[in-house]
Length: 275
Ligand code: SIN
Image (cartoon, protein in one colour):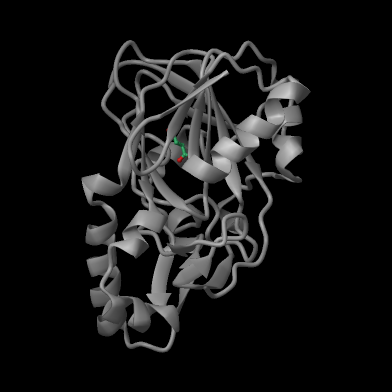
């Protein structure tokens, strides 16, 4: 097995591994902790293998809003057909932050890829936190922020195409509002990470809306610094998994007229605590 960093900040490419092998598991687990994003190349796996690998990390968290795979409803389909315009996950976000115990990781398997494009970008929330001044870190360290699924997946969601085409479901289940520390102590690494994101965070608790909007706007610009990022260019069969407590991600929607089809499994996390 070869583990090669994608950048000096986060992400690694793993070749010569098989996610079904017990012998490969310890190194894959350590690479996930060290790099936050791992692209495990060239996996020849079934949906059951995908779920068995996810089960090594913890309990499966079944997504309420994505279309489930008929044969394995614990797997969510992430699909953009050739005639669709919007892609799921186009805005920077971290999966399930609206849950009280947000998903620890997401594991995406590339089934059908466009001939070009369709990469996924990631940004390190460790690096984003580390780059702040001590004064700003002190300000953020005591704050909590609200996260919600309502505006993203509920009846007011603006991605009408996804509901009309059946890619997203159950808007009536978008009722989650959760409060998390703005800076968390990462449950696996113990490092401090920023834990707000543009898709699901709605307001910093205890501040008025203008104050909260100003701080969040600053953080969102800061977190999009290219120095904190890596990019995974997919090959068919790849399994990429990312740490939802240490990264943001964004699906690049640059392949109009082509199909992109992925299987995604998310794994249960835990309550997030103050750094
Ligand atoms: C997601 O946001 O979970 C999907 C990412 C992708 O399709 O690249």
